[in-house]
Image 1 (cartoon, protein in one colour):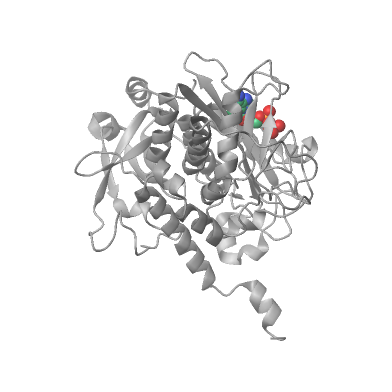
Image 2: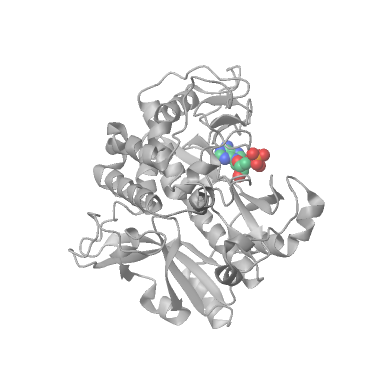
Length: 455
Ligand code: ADP
């Protein structure tokens, strides 16, 4: 696809004076791109084989605090290095950054060169390999919602987030006129991503003032997750260049709709046939699809940690704003955590609607895939479809209400420990509990407003 590079075409672009810089990045626990900028000459002249980063990168929190208590890296172990190994299949132009290309890396143990188990890309690759061993290619798409503000990030740092000005004045779901006003940013995003080898399908307005969505064509799970991180970074970089800002927080304000990252999923056979399709079934769902969905339902509560990784993520799960509160399945029904799309067609797929736009796509897709594969391996029977308004239906499987609860469910899941390994589950549960303890000790505006005079 246009925008993808090989070492040879990068060399040609360098020789032609088109590219002088290569961003060399790995993905951290938060799904952020972390790394270095190489001069293209150095990258071409051997730098593409490997580089290094401090191994604290997989143990820091959002603020880059060195969080105590991790087994993978710590002060006691001296915070050594990881090898950053560029995956040259991800080498591409990033047209929104002048003269710049980008490559994503795997994180390897400095001594053994084995993949670091807690690295999000490694976690996903292991589940993809499991699917392949069962004869399936996992195809996924992650939708991405976000808010656009007229303020620059710098302004907000100076003024405070109380001064956020959404780019639009009203709910802009599907609005063409309102989104025409946002075109300088959204068009640059679509065209920039297309020029970076990312098959953008569309952007649209979403269900609150200043809320947008970008959709990319589904692809193999690894490329989809690689694209997800690049899209978020591109949206921030383009917004910043235009004096604006965007947020991928799941819920940036109490009275605004949350931002989601729905995950569309299907399995295909090695020879390219849709394994979820059965023309003879009333809904066109194959036994493989039913087992897969049954596995995701059975494990939905244990994997919510990876779909909603922050304290803030859980504030999105509220009634009547299109974010689900129940982990049940339904045909084309947006109140269910799992919605079937493309009923009766080749594109039949499971859309998991639980994830917020703050999820780490590798961890979310790996967890969903692991749960689905467990359903296939155990030939789990699919529970009956739920119908109607799931918000008001009592007595059905609830999505955990807090990060504390989700972390406990993941921690106590023997199945998850078997699928991901103790080292991975322990690592991410520790990260979640750190988030909870950080949030627990902070005095919020809510508490002060409520209590200052009246307590
Ligand atoms: P919506 O109306 O919910 O946005 P779309 O029809 O735009 O739904 O599709 C949403 C996403 O689903 C797109 O990114 C699309 O590429 C993806 N998709 C389509 N078919 C499949 C499939 N078979 N497997 C996984 N994802 C798919």
